[in-house]
Amino acid sequence: MNKEAKNNSENKSLSRKDFLKGMGTTLAGVTLFGGMGTVLASFNEAEAAEKSGMEHPLPYKRIDPDKAAERAYKYYKEKGG
Image 1: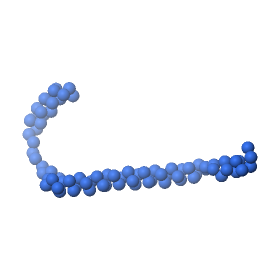
Image 2: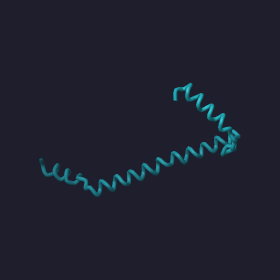
Image 3: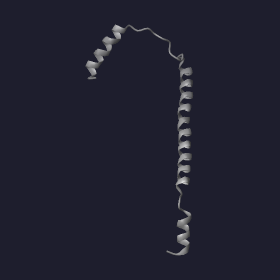
Image 4: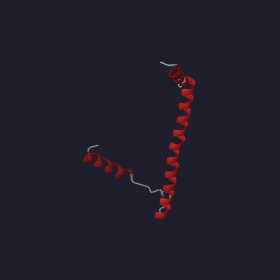
């Protein structure tokens, strides 16, 4: 191995500290930009709800517990659980 190749390999060596610092920066970037998708999606949902004329959140409707249990049992048996 000549001197120039040896110097290049020494210069390219990465310390553990530099590696962890780089990984931390990468993880922070992925976390920030990954969360931006959720924020943008929520804006789109709000716009879609406004355009459709639905109020958000949906109004509360009281349900009959016996009818709900009957429907749940029926669909559980029909669809196979």
